[in-house]
Image 1 (cartoon, one colour):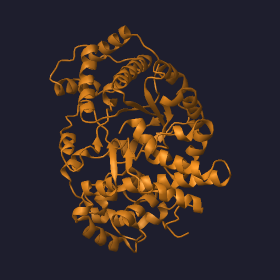
Image 2: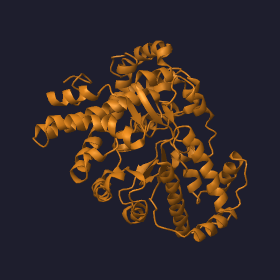
Image 3: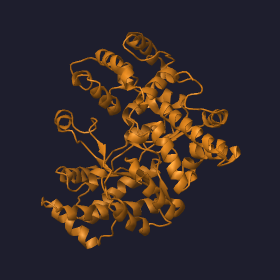
Length: 456
C-alpha cells in the first residue's frame, strides 16, 4: 500500500467497496470554527501558509515539539514564506499524527500537488500552491462547493450581529452555512470579563439588563435570530457538565451578586452554570434543536504560551479525572425524551461510561464522534468499536470537522469515512454482520444519520 493511495486505511476489498459507496456523499458538519466573515467575502488565500498554518493550533503544537522557533510559527516579524519553509523542514517528523495525513490530503485532493512535504520539496510546493490558490476554483466558497459541503455549522455568540450569515444566505452558498448558538461567554460568570460581556449583550439588543429575566430575554433574542438563519443546534464548552437542578430564586441572587461586582464562591459558580445550561436547553427543546455538550477540557495549561499569545494557541489538554456522571444525570433526566443531546469528550478514557450512559437514555442522547485530540484513525476506530459494542454504532451522529480551515474539510471527512469503512468491513469480515448491513451502516453514519438527527 503506497502513501495515500486508493487503499489508504482500507485493508480489504469489502472496505474499499464500502468506502466507494460513501466517498462522494455530501458533507454535513455540525460543528466547526470557520471564519464566516472571510467566507462571506470569499476572501482568497494569500499562500499555502495562510491556508494551512496561520490558524491551526494543531500545526503550531507539533512545530513546537520539533523545535521550530515561535517567531516562525505565530510571530509577526517572519513572513509566511519563511513560516512555510520552517513547517516543511520538520514535516516528516509529523508522520504518525493525523495532521501529517490531513495536510498531504489537502495538497493532493484540493491543490493537485502530489509531492511529499519536506525540506527538499518546500519551495516547489510553495510555488505550485501560489499558482493554484490564485485561481477562482480555490476561493473559499468555491472550495466549499467542490468539497460538496451540504451543511456546515459555525460557532456564534448570542451577541453576534451575524451579518455575514445574512450575506451568505443570498450567496451561492445559500442554505449551506448555518450559525450555532455558543453562549459560553454568557455562562462563564466567574470570568473577570463577564460583567463587560453582559453590558455588550445588552447593547447588542438595545435593551437594559437589570436582572436575570432581562439576561435570558437577551439570550433568547440571539437564539431566535439564529433560528431564523437556519441554526439547528447550540454548543457548550464546559469543564464539568453541570446539570443539577437549581431554584430560580437562587440564580436570581447569584446573578445580582455578580452584577454588583462581588466574587462568587466556587459552589455558587457551579450553581449558576447549572441553571444556565438547563435554561438554554429549554430554549433548544422548544425549537427542536440539538444540545451539544463538550466537556473535560483544561485550557491554557502552558503559562508561557498564554502570556505570549493568549487563548487558542495550543495549550489545551484533556482531564482524565473530570467528574461528569453525577453532575450530568439530573440534566439528562429532566430532558429525557424531549431534547436531542450529543456528548463530546476529549479523553477516550470516558468513552465506556458515556456509551453506557447514552444506551440508558435512549435514542435522543448520543455519544458524539471522536473529538479534538481523538479524531485520528486510532481514536475514531476505537470510538466506533467501544461505542458500538456498548451502545449502538448506529446511534452515533456522524463526523464534526471542529476545524478553522476551509481547505481541510474534505480531508477530515475523508479520513473519517475511510476509518468508518475499514471498521465496518473488519466487523463484517469477522462474521459479526452481513456485508449488506455494513453497507447500510456506512451510509447511515456518513450522511443519513446526521441529516436526520440535526434536521438539515
